[in-house]
Image 1 (spheres, rainbow, N blue to C red):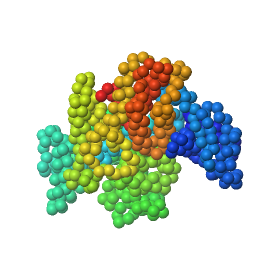
Image 2: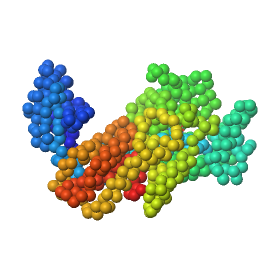
Image 3: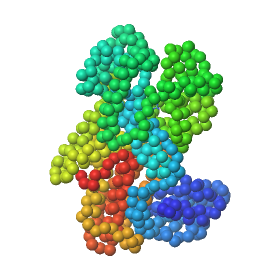
Length: 564
Ligand code: ARG
């Protein structure tokens, strides 16, 4: 039992059947100031039940609570304030972390349930955007968090590898492209053709007709169109894979939109059988007025299927494959309406599992206050951002730690870590303006700061050169300056569950920053490596901090070099 659970149990014992433990847990607060104890229980709700004054109730609870294991339990106004016994608390938490190691914070909440995570999903023949980067790192972190609490995540890269843009691209390639150019810089040149197509189509509307024609050919399996499509897809995927490799992200599947080409007919058939399809100006729609949503466009007037039709087929396919506990879609908030429509149509079809579909939206990244747009050429190139961050890390290492072994590898871990952490530390829904200086900043609330704190802890442990003795009576740490650090350490399991229920990796990132700051403050004011009675306990603390920081960074998909 952790400290919070102990407090809940004490209150539950005192309250009997009056309040269930779950409700006690909800009411329990952490006071702003530690002079009011470590946990505080407000008695206002009980006052309503008992029709008694809150301070009276607080005192009556204190009278019956068993005080063993606490420094004291007192009534202050309407609150019952719990002061934990600090040395017992320290021993418990240090022993727990050091014995459980990387399993500290694991739980079985998920009971082995499957969680497919639709993430990254960039569009073929275009550079991966900052939005896709956000989806990639948020999805990757959620996969790690869900796996830690006992689910089986499946990372799906639902590539945007089908659609009218391929018709346009083929036309553009025929007109202005060359194999040599594409081989030299696949995405750069495909993008160039695509941008030129849109520019010329403004004055030459025939181009759009040609584009449509070639897309039709592609849909009908024309060999030349298929060959070019496969070529573009393969080249793009190879480029994306370079980025994924740098980020350290792997997928369980890259079945994209094209994979569903032959899986949509049954969906359209099912919609027809269930009398959900309606003709509207030549197109086929599902009316969603009841739900307060715009209609879902299932088939265009020319017979072409649409984004939502593929997503319907994919959702059903995932349900049959995984019988998922939850099915997550990490996609920008601009697609909120789309996912509402998707769920609404599935519910109308009678698929009750649609309620387990969760759209995990995130905010937009802008540049100079403007939306990024591949078509308008207002893009941030991810590869360049990563290069820049790694170069900066290299320069810092060269000046601060010139003798570091594996300097290149560490520079990669620090540079890439900075970019990932920067993306994950803000609330997922916050939008932010892209600034290269901000992303590659290493001071303040950044990934490198957390990495550096861990490396510093590791260096203390190397210098100490003795192993920590795990016998509990060797873990007595009475130094009040260590108290904040210990409390944060104990909080890690709660943070993991909260990050999972809120689909919010920033909970972990913010936690890592708090812990790192508290540890640095402790370290600045205490001598660790002096031979006295508490040396072993202090080393245990340093080791626990390092383990938890590493575990937190790992949940974010950020690496933790032992030296930097
Ligand atoms: N390729 C899409 C885009 O870039 C994102 C796909 C999201 N996933 C999905 N199942 N719809 O906008």
